[in-house]
Image 1 (cartoon, protein in one colour):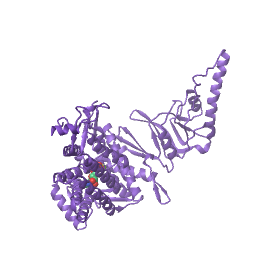
Image 2 (tube, rainbow, N blue to C red):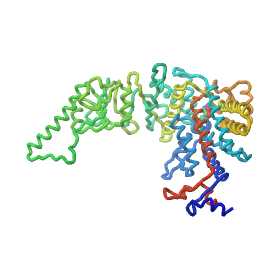
Image 3 (cartoon, rainbow, N blue to C red):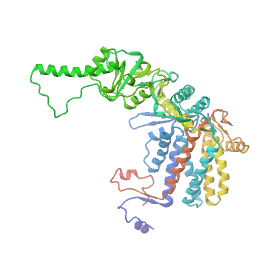
Length: 542
Ligand code: ADP
Ligand code: MG
């Protein structure tokens, strides 16, 4: 046996570690399940928070699957694959990260049982593939319709999405989210155009979550360039510039020969004239606020201040773009071309001190297509978690508007889809039938976990839920807050279908990917880290 292995490893460097076949699969499944277990207890409104302390002693407290997995350091490659599901879900939609990871872990747990019964991985993978396609069909089939004007339903989606995070103020924040999304949605030829990039989420600690607000305009973390400028301008006419208001310093190889004091004076006069000329062009447009992506030099500041114009410099390009959407301004790249048509409008532009730091508020814009949600909260941890809740909810609400569909939460949709999958499995038959049934059982991890978090007996609850669903009460799920089962649609626990589809899809995909691996070989170690990257359990495998 040892000899055979030596032969198999003949092409490997001496001492290189290798694990094959069943052992490789078992280890990978173990790691994936461990990662899923690490976030499982955060699921749902009664989910627990995790506190992560990094090497520097910085603390993150969160209930958000993606955040937790991003913060904990995971070395094993399969562990990293699990983290990637959370990251993808987070960037595609925002919400449903824990669901995706937990479902992936459970699909692998079910796969392990099938492997134990001698079923080949390729049959399992086949069955999972069939099950995924059907599951997505079923999620769509049990969806309810929703439109961009259904503010009440959208609000409920936002509240469900914020579950477990910033709970005490979720009603306030959920309303801000719905207002923000409705404000920037553009109905174009019956199609909804919605780009969440134009909702800026700005946070500042101090005050309480209830002081969070929607700004009809943009808040930027900057200050006015000069103390001689007004701190507040009403009826603002705003010029957005992406060129600097300064004289470019001469190229390195050009030398200017100045031989007399007269010449120096001439040179300075000329520079002053050029700056004055730039500022005159700005004054001629009628602008009273200048917001510049680049620098503004002292002389330009002086002339602008003399004319009572407020100026802000070195503003990020992304903020300039948002300001353009909010105020209707056109960004100017050449001073030559500017005129009054470039200007945008806002009721006021003001500099305000918020917990010790200056911020610029460009607000009261008329029908702005970019807005800001300003989150306030007692401590850094509170505003951070509130921000994650708001970002999740923004993703959910806009996803619901875009696809126009939602499902009942609290595990209701998972129970229904699992039951339909079991019926479908019978039609398929063979070994795939077993895999599809395993897939159905894996989906039930969601209601099971929610029941546990409410202190209920998960087995009893699953039976009770299935009985309801058999009687066509397909919205019945776990009412976690009241520790019972009820109609989740009536209880307003609803989620966009897209979240589920994305979560099931990526969870299923990664579980198949992991099942396909039957060989783990440690790389040469020349690239990075070497044996440090070896999965646990590899040390004694040669
Ligand atoms: P994820 O990261 O997957 O979004 P969450 O911790 O946000 O995880 O939990 C989402 C789950 O909690 C969903 O299945 C959702 O339906 C459920 N849920 C949310 N609010 C409630 C509620 N009030 N009662 C029961 N289930 C709820
Ligand atoms: Mg969530």
